[in-house]
Image (cartoon, rainbow, N blue to C red; front, side, top):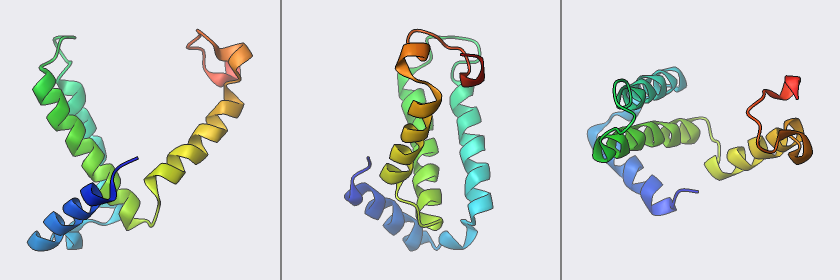
Length: 106
C-alpha cells in the first residue's frame, strides 16, 4: 500500500523532532479527523477545489493514518484487505452494483 521507504522517512522525520511522545492513538485519531476536516474544507464552497491544496491535505490525512497504524502495530495493507473482505460480504455484487444503498437496505 505505502512503500516502506515512505514509512521510514516519516518515522525519521518524527524521531528527529522527538514528536512520538505526542502520538498516542487518541491524539493521532483526533489529528486524522482534524486533517480530514481540512480536506473537506477544500470543497466547502467550490466542487472544483485547488488540486494542490487537496493533495497537501490528503497527504496530512494519510500521514496521520500511517502513524496511527504504526502506533497500534497494524499493517495498513492487511487491515485494508481485511476490511475489504468484510465489505464484500455486506455488499454482494448482485445486490450492490450501481447502487449507493446501505447494506442493510439492499
